Picture 1: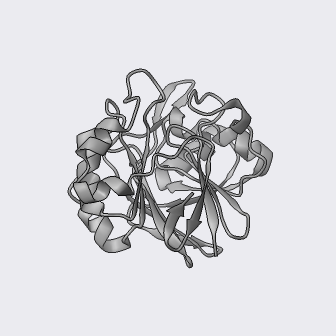
Picture 2: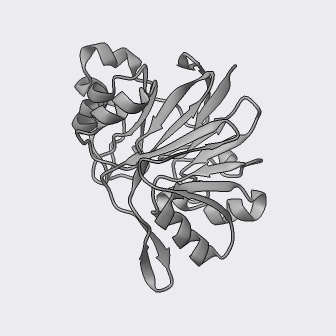
Length: 242
């Protein structure tokens, strides 16, 4: 059984499941400077997974609801805030530490060290705790998308609880951990594949993975997979392969 993972820039990823369902993580496409024009419009979206409420992670949720009416999974307060402000959408709320299964897709929320809000005409609205997301499915390697976060010691517990094979880590600094923090996170998680994200989007963020690669433990350097935006990578039980 195989599937695919596509990096759409910044922190947005598209997962194509074996049954061809499309899962979007933190969909920010239309205004995302890191997303090519050819990828800004999607043809299908069945499930949306959200790590937190900032515009560069939920920017296209409303248009995707209008076009596809996907199931949206995220933190209880974030889902409630979106439902209240948008007035539509199918939401499946959950809390940090919880797991839910949707037609064989297991989704768990972990902690993250960041903030979370959504913009409203009256100003920012609180949108619950920020999260990381674990995506698991029988026959496929487990993915951990860390969301926007600093490194924290309980990543050791995430490794112990979920044994993620693929870890998607922000490396851009300024708003999240930078190269050294992400390298320490990788050290604790010890995955088969390390995928960097949240970099090269704005001038204030890191523009390459060079510093991150240099900071990685020697036996983890070969596990770094800097996915080109738009390239399909095969996702199997063994991990990610070109």
